[in-house]
Image (cartoon, rainbow, N blue to C red; front, top):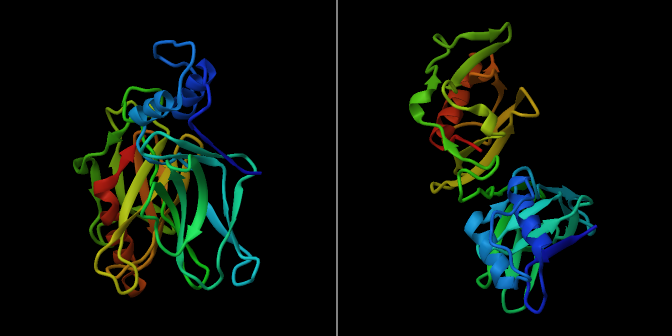
Length: 291
């Protein structure tokens, strides 16, 4: 198991490498670019950079802790691709990649590319690097818990394959602002909100991406977590927003009904639980995108 990265100097690349770039971005494998006999590293990295923003591939490079609290503690990184700002790509194969971490130590799991060394890797560090390029994957806390910090790479060209991006305007989102007005979805569930998809060619998209502000304990300057719902492969998934200073953790379900997304929560008024779900959902509304 392991990783590989491209593109680096003193290597010769051909048309198959151009196709590989396009395949990783669009799934098509057909490159709409002028053909050359060979390409150098700057050609190919520049091409990738022109097509995609920095970040992790959708549903790729997810991290999880193994053997927490022991001397053998590691973080496992799942299959996926990391795109750096310069266009360099780091690929984790189907077996995943495992990195050692220091037990009882807070820090970051991140992919790092050093232009001077012509090397890319996924590493753990107590601080983020001040040299080269990096993409943060996760934040590790002293107690061994892990927070997903991935930002997903997006195509810079909205018409490429299935990578079009459609920001959902807030006027498409219906919010039920109190338990009393929220419709029932089932005998045990209430509808928190709905996202209208009418007039959108949903066949161009595979995911609903949402971001939400996460303040964390004792913090007033929130960072942003990013999650996604793969509605092509699933009609219903958990919609989870972690708690902060401003609201408790909220676990809802998001349901794809063809012409809309429906967000539901457990039907309960106990301790103002509905209000917590509502606040969490509303915090994500400005960041809904279809990709």
